[in-house]
Length: 345
Ligand code: TXA
Ligand code: MG
Image (cartoon, rainbow, N blue to C red; front, side, top):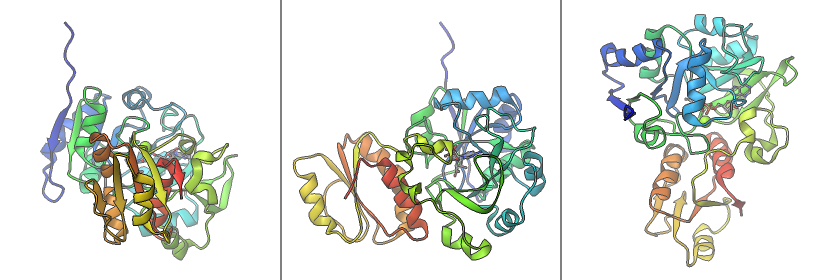
């Protein structure tokens, strides 16, 4: 009989953990293994970004297509300079303003980074997370950590250690449990390199996130926001490889009702006779399976992926979600909702 594969969970409190609690994770990383850890956005599944065989283990555990590049997490500008070839002035401004935090920057990659981490591309996506546990882990380990979201490929990103456990039990040795992720949606991704490898004077938004277009434009001026970003699953030649894959999808069908419609009325029309789950933003519908966010976009974003998982576990067949205005964090929230949906009304 073979050894039974298990996944251990180590609980840490972000405000008062000790480095000793991270020692097992650091040991595993040093052995070329993978570890799931919390960030302020979603949980990541990490490995040494410079070690090809370690990186490949992430792709196997997640069932992630090998041409989908992952984000490299660093803890200092020194480490950033090791993984990229040059930082353009505007990128530097963004780094000064938003790091550590939920902003990922795509730059030309250095030779050090395993090409398994970048899906064979000549560019690399880098971010410095603000979560204390993530930062401490990278610092203590001493190498940049490549980490996609710690879900199995195609599922919504995990925002709690339980979500990681549900998806990857037996496939990874360790999860560091740092509680619920503060933001709940993945980082903003912005690129300074064109698909042909040329420097871009005006950077392009690849994925909206917590750091909003408005906040970015306030410090570096206009950026390109592809109008298709929110409908990226429909574009044929995606700007960012990850965009061609269906993401964030619960098993249930998702229908988004755009703001300005009578949401409550629509729910009763569309949901009649079905086992539904409701995500209401402005007004409570008053059905059994409902998350109500009282007009708070931050709470909606934080709970979205968890709500998808809760509804799936209850066997909901249709999720009806109230849309929000695509301003600030609303752009990221609508991007994830639209990608998960089969219909937008
Ligand atoms: O918040 C986050 O970004 C989380 C946490 C763990 O940091 N990570 C995350 O990683 O969401 P992942 O791998 O699930 O999403 C990375 C996205 C994908 O859409 C991928 O295609 C894109 O970034 N990406 C990564 N490297 C890229 C590159 N070199 N060029 C273009 N897009 C890239
Ligand atoms: Mg992901």
